[in-house]
Each structure stands twice: as C-alpha cells, then as structure tokens.
Image (spheres, rainbow, N blue to C red):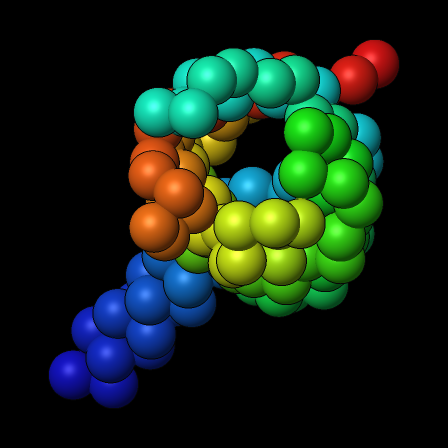
Length: 119
C-alpha cells in the first residue's frame, strides 16, 4: 500500500512539474496588427513576465501607456489606458511566437488583434 501511495505521489509531482513548466513566457517585444470598429493600427507591445503577472508598455495610435495583465497557460489578458478613449482590454491565445485575440476599447468599440514576437 505504501509503495502505491509513493508511486501516486511521484506521478502527481510529475504532472504538477509539467504543468508549471508549460507556462508560456511572453517577455519581449511584440508587433501587432489591430482591427477596430474605428480603424486599424500597428502597435508595439513590450512585455516583462514574472510568473503569471505581466507588465510592460503599449505604443501605438493611442499614444504610449504602461500595461498590466496576466498569462494563464496559453491565455494572455492585459489592460492599459488608451489616450482619448479610456481603458483598453486585450485578451488572446498564445501559440508559439504568435498571439491572436480580441480587444475592447469600451464605448470606442472593439475588434481583433494579432501579434508576432520580434526576433
């Protein structure tokens, strides 16, 4: 019985270790294409990641702003203050060096976005 419990504990530790190591790291510069109800743009996002927390900057059509958010598995979500339109919220799915998702600029409308990690 003890042997079975030790084996089960070992399997559980392995599963947890694999899950933790599967955390996607988005640190770096990302070049995006955003399609909004208002028009389109090509902002740059720079992310720094510590665990599941991200901080960074946005630079694009709505000026420059600091951003904060999270990465959970392969899902990213972040917000920043967009000049002239208020808060912007981005949500996306990370696949390797690409991200694809939706964005919401409140009353100014929403849209879609894609990003590629810069080399």
